[in-house]
Amino acid sequence: MPTYQAALTSAIALNLHSFYTGAERIFEVIAKQVDHYQPTGSNWHRQLLDQMLVAIPNLRPAVISENTYLLLDELRRFRHVVRTVYAYQLDSQRILELANKSFHYFSTFKKEIQQYIHETRINKE
Image (tube, rainbow, N blue to C red; front, side):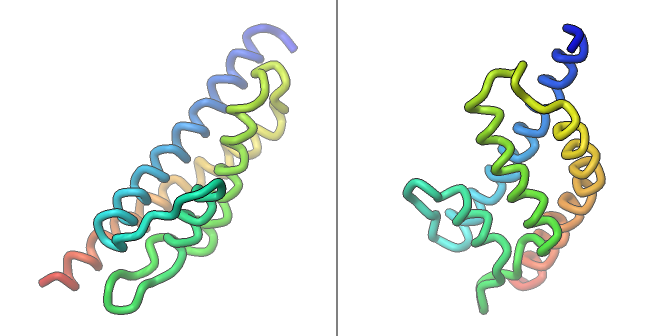
């Protein structure tokens, strides 16, 4: 693989990593400030994502849809790969497929977060 292609693959992988990390930070704020419960332990990342999929009666609606959950779970697993392998070992085809999928779902994720904010504001009033 030419050097520039490896560099682009690494850059895309790091952007996917950053996208998931940003989503997870949003979920951590919701878990702490709204749910008053943030998972702990070795699989807290997965538990936090699971928590955002579920509506909590009389507290908040589900934060994300099932489709968004599936993508974010895939990104969660991918982030682990990015953190544990060398860039030259990343599968460029897999990264491009995930990037295309993520690009499509980014606007859906953004809408779901905006909808969550809107719904929680209405419920407070």
